[in-house]
Image (cartoon, rainbow over all chains, first blue to last red):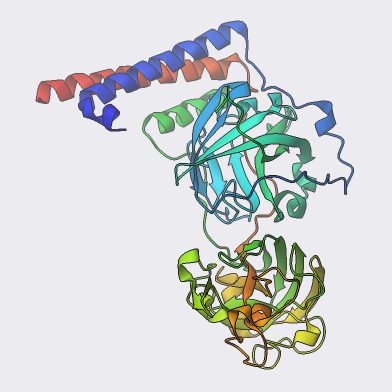
Length: 216
Length: 254
């Protein structure tokens, strides 16, 4: 941060202008090749018989409570800050104002400590891909790293992917507390052309994993 | 499509000027009934390695409570309560003191964090704070148990639950690992006729309002026709030009 600001306002303006121009050109390129729909989760994500929870294997001790600051998913080249989000007026988890950021629900566990840590993100904004655009391309075993305020990193591995219809969403199952550290990532899925909205939520479950040398 | 283009332009102007797009979230809502969740973790210095979960469905003063545990002292009763009226937190390791020559954390040491008892989560009969706090014959027994009961809580406890200020505390530890409650930590701070191990806090979890329903995690920007993307590109280029103009101005001022 210091490096960025020490360049002064002029530097910052230039950097912003460059970034904007780059984004614009990238968008133009996308337009030429046609719009890219987000990657779709595997078909297995759709089949969802209730009560099929697997017994987790024994693992190392949970981390202490420390709020998350960023998320990194090497498999889809994703890295973005995590903001705090609370409940929206309708009772759902609020979304981060910046669609390129992820949001951690402050009423949930912090990633790595005992319990269910809930992190949400936009699939897309009005103008293009957002923070969790690539989530559907992940598979069981994909690695997720969460950096935390205490300087530690919590390492996770995807253990389940499910797509749930918004009008039949199993809130207790998705948001329910867990006895061991669990990471739940949620974004939208299932575009409905007629209603001009997403019909479903993609829910990824991840459990603690040992850091892998090439990805840490 | 024309309508969509207009919307896109507005949205882009908003982005470029740093205006927040998503609806602002509020910490509470009007109905104030609903679901509270807690993950139960070991109290520091207690030597407990277990864990648990708590779910509370609150409707008026009716609380339907589900608590699951694992890894507690087997064949022993575990007192469990809603604690209320303090910080709504679990005590950190720094709250531990010397008890009978051992650094440990008894129920009194945790009071500044989780507060006094608001309700006793007994299996049958009274659930009050006064008469049932240590009703050892009416609490769940064992290392792993599932507790499920609908109780009526007093107004103060209901208010604390709604304010996300209530904490679930499960008591009963085996500090010296000998498989029973004994006097290794001296007599209980709550009832001198009981060993401290029997009443010391074991698992703790602050109850927080749980979300309900699916998230609104997309606006469709990757699903629309080319018009949207073209508009977006144009908007970003305009923003870039604007920024460069600002840059010029600021350098002139310098």
